[in-house]
Image (cartoon, rainbow, N blue to C red; front, side):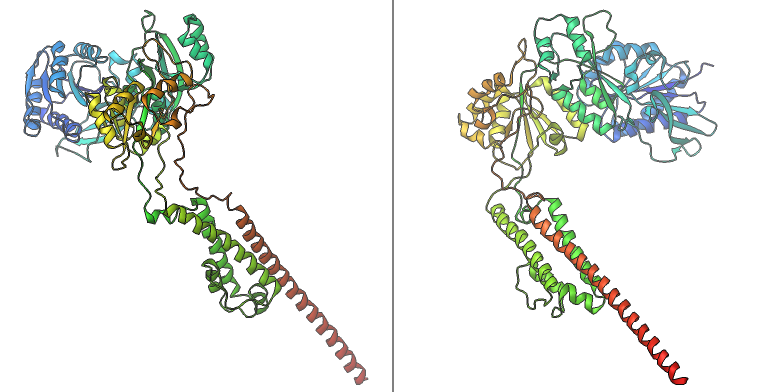
Length: 640
């Protein structure tokens, strides 16, 4: 009898999620149907995805039993429909109907489908494909057609191993600690055939969250333009000039300059969050026949996290991120703003130390307490609170040392209390806003909604931002729509919006905003939170000055184009918006020096007093001992 094997393959194709599962032959098709149905439900129900079931090729009676049982199980939940199509038509139907479950006949069909759809871009966004493959091949973690494909290490491979009374659900992880790029089997769950259920909740993996420090290559395929910028003017001159291709490649390979740009910045953010080290590698010309490296979009790289990152190049004009103003600090938050966090912590530690000294002094001798606090002061803790709030002292110490310590503490509290009151007045009388995002990573972390009307970024930017931090992104068909939204929120912090705008779109937005450039001055616009310039058709901006001059006619706020002689692509910092200064430890260093001096004098006086007490005690004991000796001597003489 023919050996029945099922595979569940999943590969990320542009925006497509898939998984690979070899499933061993099972005489009882009920258990197999239950297992693959639960896998399908886990991967689809959690994402609320509707799908269509496709069958390609001829099927045996056992295969039909599994397929029919699968349909009976999932149809009430997903309302799926069964279609029999040729493999070449499945890709076309998926682009129309969306997500799909496909039953294929052999590995040849799988390879045909994979190669025809891997680099395609016709699939709708967020399409998920599960492929069940039946064939007489060995159950291996990585199917034979993809063993030599380094990009397949990006994927999680799942499979079910058939045992006597159970099936074990495994995954193949290529990035375990110490075994980078070598798949290692990890058991995820166990399916009990008798009970017809999993021992624990069935969960799958759609992306790698931790690469355990593995080195991943970022490959740039050379063409007329590159999608990245470099800090080195020599490299940029090579890319935009007429130098030979071989010279540029050698220069790029020998340089240690880091790549810059929007996509490179997102790649760096991903490397921090996914724990991998990156290495830049310059590839060959895309039209070169000797180039065997496939072209994969960057969102595929970031969502799948692979060992080899070939990056497609994009032709872009210069871009900007215009972000809506952040929220204003509330009155309660302003109470803590005059000092930074470190200063508040040091102040708290200061008063905690003072109360600890007062508490410890209760267990010392009266002479020590009088030396530190004075004879007349009976409640030193109350004195500390009175000094803090500027209340006059009821009783002053009579000891000179205690008075000097009290004077230093009074001066210390006077400095901090005066600074706090004056800065608090500034904060209360100004609308201080929370910090603005300065980098792409800040934009992602602060959960901004990205808005763009450029269709060329729909697939790239949406997938990258959504994958990094679940950020939302909205794509508008017409720039007029985003222009109205731009003007509506130009000075409003009701929503966190970041407009991904090209420089040539600003005149359109200004016209929509009734041509008022003054309005845009209240809109916190930054020339790209990452380095500004990217390729624009057949022209590359040579200097920062060239870019800023192009922005001047668009009505950009004055502080954005008051440039200096900056390095190319240097990040441009926005103005401070005249927010009150937050005082730091350096600003209040003199007060802390006074307090440290007071503490030092207290400790020094305490030690001197302890030493003097010990010396007086020793001296008294010595005098007493001499007196006893004299008394004994007199008694002895009288006896004689």
